[in-house]
Image (cartoon, rainbow, N blue to C red):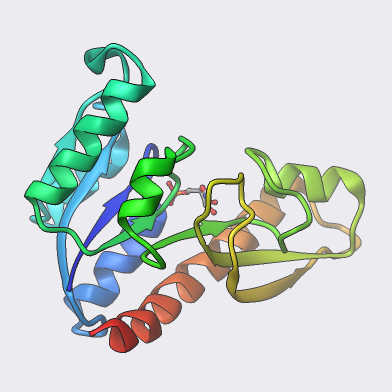
Length: 189
Ligand code: GRF
């Protein structure tokens, strides 16, 4: 079972996953990290951990259709069985999703179906909910709509700021995602 991590940004979730992987906690093989942003910090992190990297942009492939085709081909060439999205800021195309049935997972920083989209933490904070959290879910063609695998709640305290909430959410993400992948990959093998 070979898995790839798709990420567009900082890569703190990648860091948590690769740390678990290096500790021998995850089944399968971490084959590569792909980013649609050639200067994403996640690629630097991957190199530090000696994980192979791939990157190309939508623009290089003349738009979304060409990009998705190239991505799917690359994943096939690399014999990838499972995709782990970790801050990947693009919506996957239908062909790509169909190529990995039940084999694409994502992490989202709210208790879905509440606060989907790009700003899950801020939207929950500004709405004034007292409990938010983290969701790991399978990916379907909607935005943050696939079947939920695991959730963990985070309390928003009286004196909470957006910054302190972000820290709490990320701490939960970094524990929850490796734990869920450990279980999923053990079942997938
Ligand atoms: C995380 O909050 C994740 O839930 C969301 O994007 C963010 C990625 O952060 N999908 P990082 O790049 O892993 O640090």
